[in-house]
Length: 93
Image 1: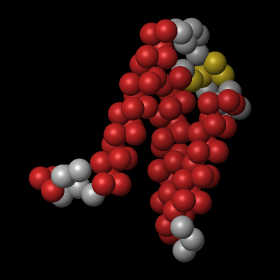
Image 2 (image 1 turned 120 degrees about the horizontal axis):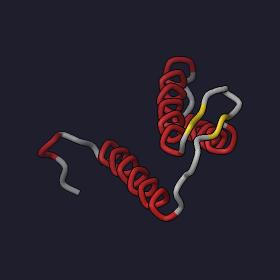
Image 3 (image 1 turned 45 degrees about the vertical axis):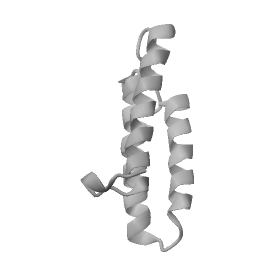
């Protein structure tokens, strides 16, 4: 993959492609099965599917930032923790 025109690395391109794929998937999901009314989860505010995606992505960003600040272990551990966070957000928030 030749991404030198923007000085991107392959992981950076993969990151943005995955975010784009998530948005496309959420759009298709919403078209096929409309989300209906927002639901109130354990955090105490009403959320839709899009809200839960945003909260999970925001949480994943913070998990990775704190991981880099406090741990010297591989970022794959932070990624695994972020995936667990996203599943919990979609199930209970």
